[in-house]
Amino acid sequence: MNISFRIRLFISSGLFIICLLSTQQRVIGQTEITKWQYGKRGAASITYDDGSINQFQKALPIMNRLKIPGTFFINTGQIPGSQYQGKFIGRPVKTIIEESATTPTNKNNLFERASAARYLGYKGTGEVFTNAGGKIDAGKPEEAYKIIDELYLKVRNGELQPVSATVNEGSRSKGITWDDIRIYAAQGHEFASHMVTHPYMAALDEANMLYELEKSREDILKQLGPRFTFSAECPYGTEDERAMTYAHKVYPALRNRMPESYMDELNRASRENPGAFNKEYVQWQRGATTKTPLPMMKSWIDTTVAKNNIWLVLVIHGVDGIGWEALSSVMLDEYFQYMKSTDDIWIATFGDAAKYLRERMNSTVKSSENGGKIIVTLTFSLDKTVYDIPLTLKTYVSSAWKEVQVKQGSEKRRIGTRLDNKGNYVLYQVTPGAGAIEISGV
Image (cartoon, rainbow, N blue to C red; front, side):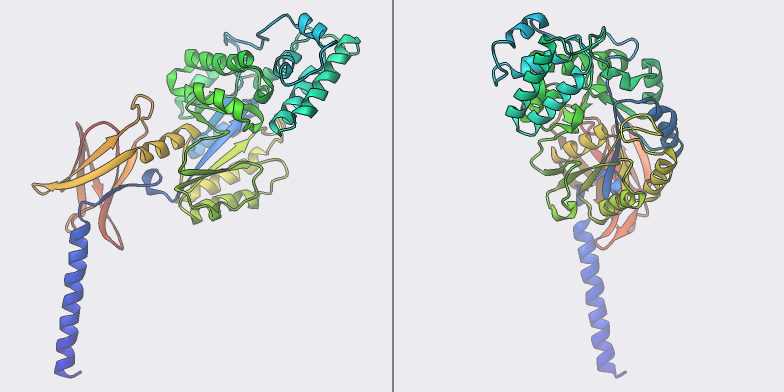
């Protein structure tokens, strides 16, 4: 190697080092709120509908063993100790039955007649109500009119067998008590509303829709406290616009629909590839049924990791033979272990994940240097009594810092630094609205 080449190599290497140091210097103090808590690449929420007993006796112990939280959407009506059970709010059903003889079902009386259907005092009316709700949800009101007319005709002709109890939807939750639920909630699980009686909300009139929404909330508030009144799921996964309008006035977050402009939602029936959507977040719901192969369920996890904007929301009903489309607890055990072993996924309750992304999208972060310390300020525009999930911040620090102290208010933590292609950084949790953060080398 000749002398001139060595000189050029030395100069080039020196310039590279200078540029690298300059780049590292420029990023010091740069701070961002990570897309998911702990800087993970994606999020997953395991949700259960209806509150059937094996969700708690079989699935929940598996989750506790693996330290995985879940969200349980419960029907409050027949849980012992609940103040509110199923009832029809409105005119006497006898009057409604009599009117059906002369006035066909139409857009003006459909919701009242459908709401009363389960409370007419005859067997099988609940199934008819649900069928009508499905037609309304599918945008086929004329077919719903026909279903309701046929029901009331059978009632008037005495073709149906009388029963003493007209709504038994709450029996989905048979065997569970509020005392049990309080124990499970203390273990880190979320309990949320699935209404009082599991109705098809699209088929209810205003009074009965509000009863289901509000009275379920009241019982949960009384039994568990305000933290558990954040989330809800209107039964059957309805996305009926009218039902969603009412429900969003009572619950901040619905699994049915979250109207954030920065998020695409793919419901359980969607066959679209979540990787094709490029908004800040994609909520990807997947319903696991008895026919869903375990490898497919694992592929949902792999897809979530492959692209960093996916929030996988799993919907599970029955477990070990009890409940709709029951899954094996043995299979769930293997599946949850696979999920847990995937270090790039944040596993969170539905409510916590919803709060985090809203907090992130409604916060701004700034940083500055002062006396050898990095000062980070987080401006937060949401109600901190509701939105209280810690946010994860990523701040670039001096390459000389191998460990830092992070101070917010009276809280101090020592955290080791990490390295990426931009430089030396630290990941840390902060409480929204709790004051500025000081970062210093130790």
